[in-house]
Image 1 (cartoon, rainbow, N blue to C red):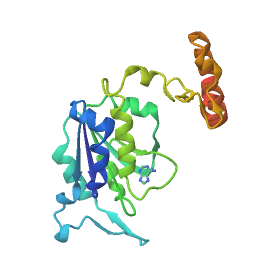
Image 2: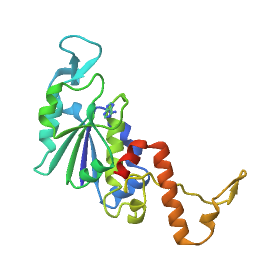
Image 3: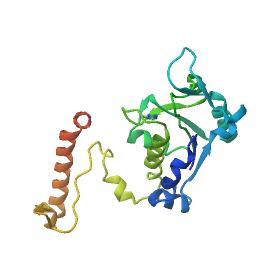
Image 4: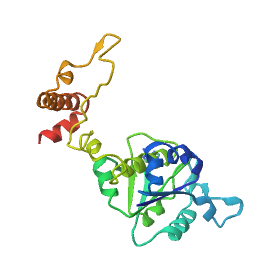
Length: 224
Ligand code: ADE
């Protein structure tokens, strides 16, 4: 898979691409990730990419042209083009599983007051990662890239993927490690019992309890 991220602030991605699992996925050629500064595609003086909003209002709006030029330069017949915008449809694990199937993702990060609405004519979908407004799409692009790359076979172990939150409609069960007693807090007895059936039952119950308490929306769906 190849992921091309279009941003005006490519340095934001430095640590993201050079640490931990994403770094390893790149090194092992599970994914190729390019961050492209779309400012280099402007044809205007002084590298201009934005202007004031028609109709007035605060802030600057990014113009379509440098982004469309960048898209045209990199897109292939395999490309799926995503615009990041708080006005988009809400992202979740189901969407990550669908995005994993594409050979090439192009992810466009907005900044300032947003991008000229006509950019929507050049993208396949508009995604929002949560009901809050970020200063730009870069963190959203990292969230989406991270959640997709970890699903690529061989990036992390299949067992980790199977048992985790959202996969079976429930949040993940809680985990513990040494020491057995930390500051007076004990590891639940059943986890020390060696009885795998009992442990599995306990974990299922805990996953259900946590989902009921923290995510009544998921719990309702799980019950349907
Ligand atoms: N840009 C700013 N906020 C965003 C959000 N919540 N999701 C996607 N892109 C964004």
